[in-house]
Length: 142
Image (tube, rainbow, N blue to C red):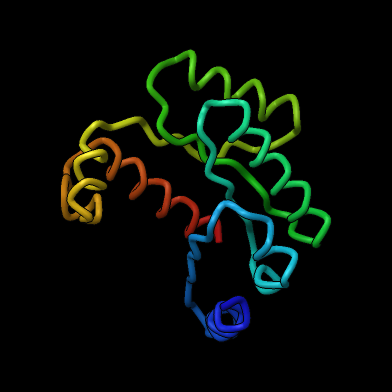
């Protein structure tokens, strides 16, 4: 599986004006197997809980050790100011950039239950809008 993913990333990396956003499992395995060799950046999606934040930090350390210079976090499922403050404090403490914030949205539970993409289930939701804005910003930062 990792060899296939590496091949797709390599082709995308060599294509002019192409952007490839790869959503991987929350595991350092894809980094240690060289899947990220052609990546320009790594964005770790974290939730406002210590275990998730610590996993994001560890992924960032590994990515930097592998030579990726652009490493950041996305705060996901943020319910209130306290959630956002917890992520910001953790990011600041560990010198990590916070690339974006995606709010908690109960509609996404329905999308998961139905097995439908959030964009198809609730295209006008705050969740989908935040992801759309974030994707455009990340691609523009290129």
